[in-house]
Image (cartoon, helix red, strand yellow):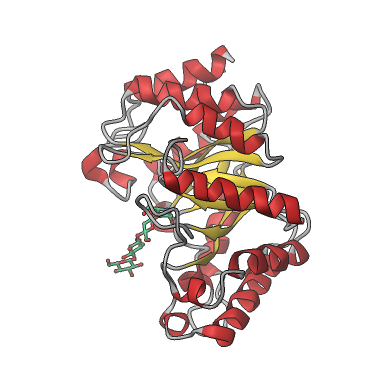
Length: 302
Ligand code: G3I
């Protein structure tokens, strides 16, 4: 197959990209995205600050722009993200305790209700663990509302849209030996044992010099899958875009039957949140990089 999406579909997987609504009038961007990918994640447009800018007043204008473009172009949509310490609107940043808990569940119900039945996977909770060696939860207003905030979010999400796969999503959790990875593993194991509704774990896979790819990523994916959840690579980008590393990540997903697919975090290097790393599969002029070819070959070799 000659596109990433069709090559991934040979094994029942998807190959997706983040889409920014502000770039949908750039025809170079839409031509590449429309042809190469078969899954879409809104880069910012379904986040809390975008969808509930004033408490109780939902706004889906930008989210729907991304959603409609995706569906009109034959792509599935991953939802990102419902409960997160970052990109909270000002009103939410000022909440705590029971009022914040109520606002969180109301937000999940509002956004998942709007997209009910339309989203394949939702990142219900994003980035709840601390970096470093502590293995602790990240400090945030959500965490201070009570350690059970994550399971409350998942139970609320299951009721709001029973058709969506419910994911926990984080970064720096690809290396099996890292404390953050083990902390996330213990949480997912506990959720499965206690019947908290979780269906998938998203590995963002923002690889860089401080958090480099390690071949034990495959062990990580296999270990989580063995707990009875699906796994996905949700925000892939690699500093310097080594063709070998891109192929390795692709092969790691393909080696794990419960790996649903891969999403790269943008189309061209100039679309990236960190363009100075040139971390993506296409150059700023829209031409294919070596990493593109290595990913396509890895997908076709499966
Ligand atoms: O929309 C405003 C615009 O009105 C304003 O003029 C402009 C001035 O700076 O800012 C615009 O908002 C920016 C937004 O992207 C949209 O471009 C924010 O400042 C900027 O902080 C925001 O960055 C996003 C970042 O998440 C915020 O946390 C990146 O685009 C997005 O790629 C990044 O994505 C995250 C994932 O959601 C979670 N995992 C990590 C990943 C990378 O940080």
